[in-house]
Image (cartoon, one colour):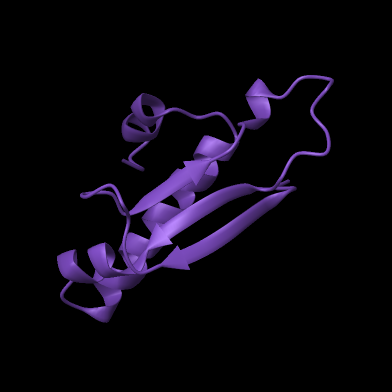
Amino acid sequence: MMDNVVILVEDESERPGILGLYEGFALTDRGWDYSGALPDRIFIYRNPILRICHTEEQVIHEVTTTVVHEIAHHFGIDDAKLHALGWG
């Protein structure tokens, strides 16, 4: 279950070369004292995705992959594990 998470779509990232970003505390890093925190944020960057895709199907695939990738970070799954699972 995802709780206290906001998904935002922005045109560009301040960090070139990324399609999405998770900002927050993964569920695996939250202790008993985690409360009252601002929502974690997942950013999806529209223009970088559109620049690498040439068809609507590619956009759908890339957005899906990026959203799954960033949600996985919320659950504490790191990039190495995501790549091993095919969600790089």
